[in-house]
Every structure is written in C-alpha cells, then in structure tokens.
Length: 447
Image (cartoon, rainbow, N blue to C red):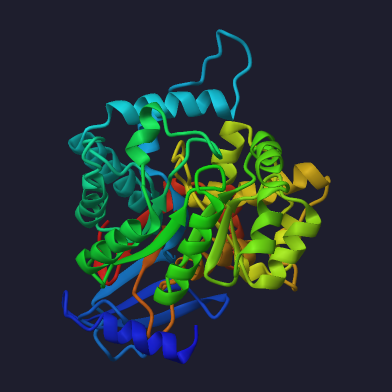
C-alpha cells in the first residue's frame, strides 16, 4: 500500500478505542512468508504501529501459543439477507432448476422482510463471518425500503447497525437499481430495491457516508447490473464516483441469458458495452464474469479494473466457470466474495477457486505465485486483494494498516502432523473454519 494511503488510514483511525497491545503468535504471515515469534504492536486506535522480532523483554499483551496468525479474510461481495434462504430451494419437484428459478425464491424472501428481520439476518450473517475468520465485508446492498410507497431507504440503516453490533469491518456498497430487466419496470419484491434517479441516490449516499463510523465503516456504490441500470444512469453514477473517490462494484455476465438479453437491448454484451462507454479503472470491480470472453477480460485488465469471483455461490446456482487465467493476468486484481452466503468458510471459498479451475483445465496449480506457491496466492486473493477492491487500509500485517487478524489453531486435528512450511497450504486446501480460534477487527478481539 502507498505511503500516502497509509498516512490517510492512520489519520482516519486516530480515535482511541482500547488499550495498546503487543501480540505474539508462534507463526505469523508477514512479507509473504510464515515467520516465527513476530511481535505486532497495535495502538489504542487499532492500527498496527510496528512489526518485528519479539525481543523477549517487552511485555506481551496477548500470547497466541499454538497459533498461525494471518490477516483477516475479506468477502468483497455479500448479500447478507440471502443467508435466510440457506437450505431452501434445494429440491426440484418440477424438474431442473436454475439461477432464474432461484431468483424468484429470493424475491419472495424480499417481499416478507421486515426491518427487524433484515437486521437480525444481517447480524447473524456478519457474526458467522467473524466466526470463520472473515473480518471485512463488502455488503452489496439493494433491499432499501421498509415502506415501498414512501421509498424510505430505512433498511440501509439496519444493515449498518447490524455490522456495528456484530463488530465486522463494513464497506457498504450502496446499490442503484432502477429497472426490472433492461427496459422493464420493477415488479413485486423488486420495488423494494427502487432508486428513482441518480441525483437523489447520490445525495442519499452522501448522507449515509456521514453516518458511518470511519474506524470500521466505509461506502462505495454498486450499480446492480446493466439489466437494472439504464445506460445514461450508469454513466452519471460513474461520474459521481470519480468525483468522490468511491469504489464501484457491478454484477457482470453471471448468466448466459443476461448476455443474450443485453445484446438484444444494447447491441453488445455487458462487459464490452462497459469497456466502450465507461471510464473503467482500478476503483471498478466486476462481480462474477462467468460468461465473459477472454478478449473482453484481457481488455478489462488493461483498464486496471478488478474482479470478484464467488465460487461457492456460483457453484450452488449453476452460474458457470469464470475464465480465471485471463483474470489472473493481473493477480492483484482478483478477490473473492461469499455472495448468497449459502456457505461461509473463506478457506473453502479459496480452495474452490483453484479446484474448479483444476477440473476445467485438467491440471493443477492454476492459481499460484511466480514461484509456484498456491497457498500464498490464495491468501493474497482472500485478504489484501479484497480490501484493495473495497478501497480500505487493511489486509496485511504491516505498519500503518488496521489490525485485522485471524488466528488458526495449528494443533487442530485437520492440521496435525503438517510441517511448518506446509501449514498455510494445509489450512487453505485441507482445513478451514474448524481451525479458526481468535479473530480481531481493528485491534478489538471479537472472538
């Protein structure tokens, strides 16, 4: 992270929240490797002030014996309310289901959501994320209204409150959603998503940004998709985001039907339209891209844009398999999301990123560093790449960044007998949430 960004993060996180602390684990992931007996000094505001060898003389506040300390994981794309669908829609009496049949079940859930129910399911989702080691969430939030006719945006505050109650770091990706499907009107549950015009939406985002706790909360915008956002509105949203320095996340080419309908409506596929019409760059992140072409992905990489892939949800919904090798042309641009939150385990999400590509290519070691290390690359994708896509100052164990950590029990039965040099790969490819013990967000131990 650039020095200017770290200085800005230190200033933003300058308010005291707890006592300063020195943390030492048996093994700590620093500078791309597991190192023994590393001391991490965290100040009262939850910012890392120093990382170096433990000297044996300075008192240690928290000794994490038998632990491997990693940066906290990041879900850069979540719809927390969809966790309420977990376990439903998994029987198919009428035949084979697909994304579009699942979507109808999701709309039915939306229609019965109350503010209290939304807050509860979001809080439970965020609490489960923390329990499995996810310390930061990019919440792609589009269920805005408690009272549709008033267009009250009351549900936005429930998501913010739920994140604060759980103690997770939040980037609220406030979603713009105007059409039901390209030029079709909103209908049914979709009316709870309604954003009528760009000026009022941006004014609302400005007001929300002022409400957030800058120590653990930030805001970006999320035009839902080209099927839900008219072209001129998307161009106006891009201009507003540029003026404010907001990140912009958008669903792109998750389904073949979406691509086909876009060609009929706009004359080309979604990503190609964006490449031709929008000022894409490093603050943009396309979600899914499971049906994007290799040529378009290479062109998108040249803009500096980012990708969020959600292997568990994409598998659950039968979305398809992204051309990950083309996305990895810029390895630092690929991150993961938990999307529907049908299953929460960042290690599992990351290993399926690699395993699905192994199945597709019939070879091993698709997601790897130049030195051939799979675990190291997966960890980058699950941590610092995610916060880069959200514009946040964390994701690594380094001075000037927020103290977000997950401690893995190296004596867990799933890791017993592993050599120290193989522990990261063993955890990411063969273990998971069962080995998570302590979790820290901004210097506060939430587990």
